[in-house]
Image (cartoon, rainbow, N blue to C red; front, side, top):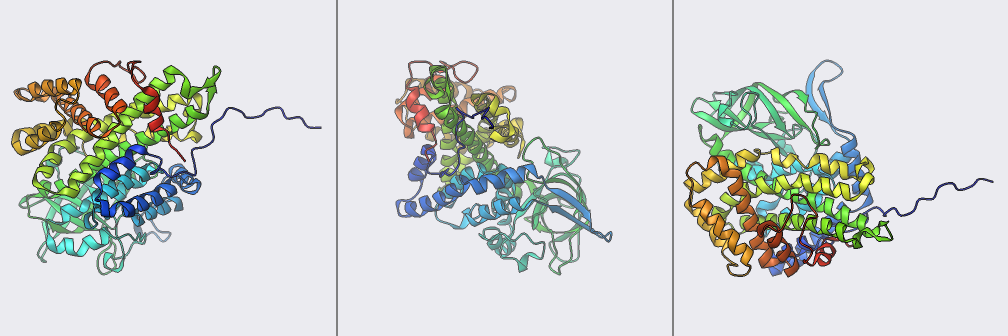
Length: 544
């Protein structure tokens, strides 16, 4: 008679079969705060549908499959014809299709479009972050294309469609299209003005022939791409369709796919242009000005994507500690673990609250809000994306050895966590962009100061941090070397302001005490013990 030699005990159940949106108290509160009352029922319903999908066993399996089966490059067909196609696992297409169907590329033509899309992007990132790249590029291409009304009229309905059509064929035959982007070159990096891709005008007005090499082309399977190239009049933005109107393939030579640390389900490529047909977007010489709207939108997605990764990492850690027992009781009830979880929860809540506030500014669209975005987006992109990696690593450690095993999902979050800090300009680029706004756009600083002044007098630690920030801002001479220090303080004051306004008192108190008041160590889990850490952790616990 066979004996049972091993029984599995004390292992938490998988965090599956739940509504990722509804289980996030911070996100649901932000939606209630930033959505017009007449739309709230509709928006909550749509986000809960997406949240249930993201939390389902089926979609979680798709995410694992897409990550475990990275895309492959096919440069030629079996007869030797150049085809330059990227092949994806079916799970990738299912994930991207659901993201498009949920409106994650449709913010520009829907009421409260940016807030509902921001929340959806944050939710869907938790299923698998890789498909966020084409969703983000497609969404962000719209403001750049609006530099040319005719192009916008042609392409915007396709980009904001809720239909995903994966076939490579002329865009005018498709019900929906996705976009990619190619700016970075071997010799330039973030210095896009060092671009050497050449654009030669053709006979038809506004059309050009491109020759050059793009070191990073995002989402190379897309229907169209925005790229920068040197036209006779200077650096210019161009639209490069993947398939031409007559059905022939444009010259879009994929040389290789990047072997990346994370984001493995998504393809990033090196591409050669060699007589590639392109349509100018905006005027010659206005390339950076034209594409900056796209860059700003994708930078906000970096904030939202990092917030989504942090939220999933914290949710997994709190869920594990809720069900795991050690040393005679639940991990959740151990004072030191509770301190770690509360500290992680604060970082996650501050990131989500800030991301949704920025999305609401896009929906508002007023002069003051747009000025606020000019300063707040690069600052938030700098700080929130940099906080993602330490949060993911600490959350994985909360699971102990289990968190180091691929099946837990935490290693995928850890590998993904540095991406958004690098994408769309690394930390120094963001910090320098903040300095540029401070020097050239006084309205941006005024709008920021109005925002952080809304709760003056509500918390002495916030008031003190604000006073110190004003001293820093008063001295811009030789500031480049301390730009990171300045931007960090700006974002912490902004996050503290938002949490004092909108978070429960125990959350705002803990954030101000640690991040602004200096009662904090160099690692997570060093919050002062006098805080209400139990309530903070309970607020972060994902509820089915």
